Length: 304
Image (cartoon, rainbow, N blue to C red; front, top):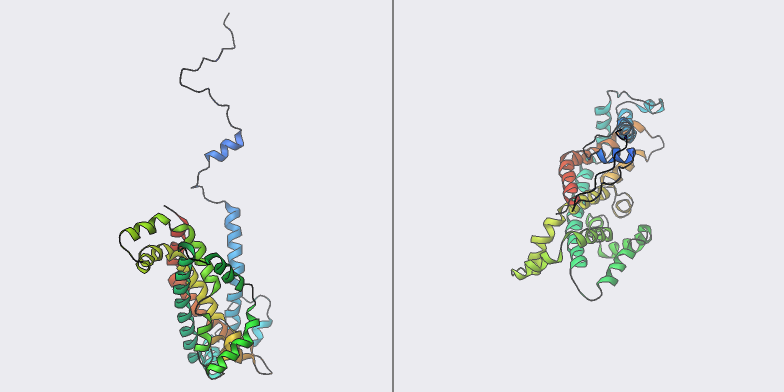
């Protein structure tokens, strides 16, 4: 009689015994590759988040294209036809073009300066060996814990002694380099640049500055792009210090917009028109540099 149970064949020499099969859920997870597309729930949450983030800007544009009564409507969605007329009122009420030019100059100079000096300092703290390096880095980080408001009065006194009050230099010079920028670039460069690559450049006869240009700068481009974007946005939206040190005849765009709501009666359609006009340059920046920024982030995320 043939037996219904068969014995397992012995394993051949050099072959390991078969492992027990994984549970069904574990096998299912193993079969799911990295190319699987997210489900409906993920796309739904992302869409809701995007709409919720974009609606305040759209609401501002709707109110700016209408009248002051549009603000009282419940969730206005359809823009009106008064945006150009309200924009003309903004141009008549404040020195918009001069303020726009001042904001562009200040933001560009601060951005270039912060990126250059922060990359230089970050490379020095990350890869150079000198006495007191760690203590100096701790001091730089500690300055980030000091509120900006505490330094406004002594900083204004210094600017008044220098005769810079009312000038753009009073806004630019105090922020030519930031502690956050130095710390950010140091943390990025400390791991992304191998020490062997720097030693190889020195063996080939490259000096300290040439090593920085040929080794550190290409590796730091993704972080430099991110730092440039954040610095430009911070300088563009800065309000408190330009309001204190500049006069109404030489304002930045943010301080000039504050003049739109300085009266007893505030026309919010005009105020929001100015806010939308001040946001347009940032939107153009994101549209123009967004692809390069994302590619730089992805390039910095992939090593090897």
